[in-house]
Length: 297
Ligand SMILES: NC(=O)C1=CN([C@@H]2O[C@H](COP(=O)(O)OP(=O)(O)OC[C@H]3O[C@@H](n4cnc5c(N)ncnc54)[C@H](OP(=O)(O)O)[C@@H]3O)[C@@H](O)[C@H]2O)C=CC1
Ligand SMILES: CC1=C(/C=C/C(C)=C/C=C/C(C)=C/C=O)C(C)(C)CCC1
Image 1 (cartoon, rainbow, N blue to C red):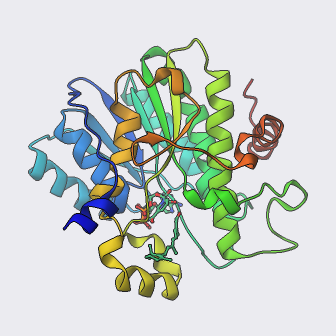
Image 2 (image 1 turned 60 degrees about the horizontal axis):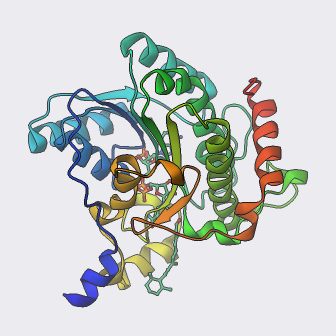
């Protein structure tokens, strides 16, 4: 049990309650996102599960509603691999809600065979980075009027081996499904860093997170990782354990001075030198705006 406790990692210890608060979590129909949604709903928030498969979302939502006795768990369609779907989600959300206090950019894909999103972006870059970049842009005014508000970006320790390959962002010249994931997770941290800089003084803060190595459906495209996860299951976190750092960054009091930073096991953690490069962060921001056809100063 003590080994298990060690691998379970940090625990979010705040007792913050969330009546009247509005939360959006992407990819919350399963895994870490679902457990994050469950905890936030149990604290009284109105939680929007933003997912690509509404049926899966409804099944998660009804389980959470029963479990937490909070009827305010809502499901909305959001496919991050299609900017039309992201825009439609944001438009409907903005029409429905006057406030947004917590946005958790949690959804992710890992190690999928080469493919492109509806807008022609390599899938890892398109879903994990660009999709969340656009979603945050579209929801930002609501976050600002609801300040203090927070944006949590779920990244990964594997950002350490990621690079932003500006000369081949869509991996058309060279593609490795493992590295493509790592590159996109580095992009999550650079986005967080640059976003924090641009949000100074607005009351909206942002954090990047490594949830730990967590048992979930993320490994679905790799039979090797599926096997490893099963073999080493006592050392792999449950989804509930994996949700702790996202919860900490969404809820812990006094975190504002650490906006833009990266957390693991509910503590601030060091990032790779590439993830600390302000020039790369700024260039990625500008290229992302160009690719998405938006102006975000
Ligand atoms: N598990 C781990 O060990 C680690 C996970 N992470 C990160 O944690 C986050 C959550 O992953 P985890 O819970 O483990 O994985 P899961 O695969 O269990 O959950 C991922 C979620 O993202 C959703 N998703 C995938 N593609 C899209 C899309 N195009 N549009 C909308 N939603 C989409 C999935 O939907 P659907 O169910 O329909 O496929 C699912 O709800 C990810 O960002 C991942 O990179 C980071 C480090 C380690
Ligand atoms: C070596 C090793 C492991 C594998 C770790 C791996 C392969 C981590 C991958 C992390 C990922 C995919 C992060 C996602 O963002 C286990 C199973 C923990 C058990 C202990 C030994």
